[in-house]
Image (cartoon, rainbow, N blue to C red; front, side, top):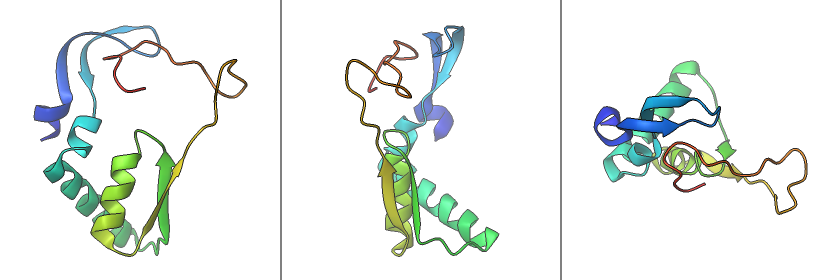
Length: 107
C-alpha cells in the first residue's frame, strides 16, 4: 500500500535543496481509510510488544495527526495530542519560514 499510494517518480526539490527523482509522502497512506487502520494496528502492536503502558501519544501536527488518531482509535485507551507551533510573520526563532519543496502541497 505504501509503495502504491505514497511513492512517486518525477523531479522533486527536497527541503535540503537537493533534487530527487523519487518522493515518498506517507500522508497519502496514513490518510487512507485502510492505511490508517493498518497504521493504528502496527503502532499498537509495537507498543504492546515493547511492554510500554502508554497513556498518550503525540507528535508534530500535520505529519503526526493521522498516526496519532489511528492509534488512539485502534487502542481505545491511548489518548492523542498534537504539538503545534505558534509561528507568524515575522518568523521568530526557533520557527522557520515555509520552504517550497517536494510536491509543495499542504505545508
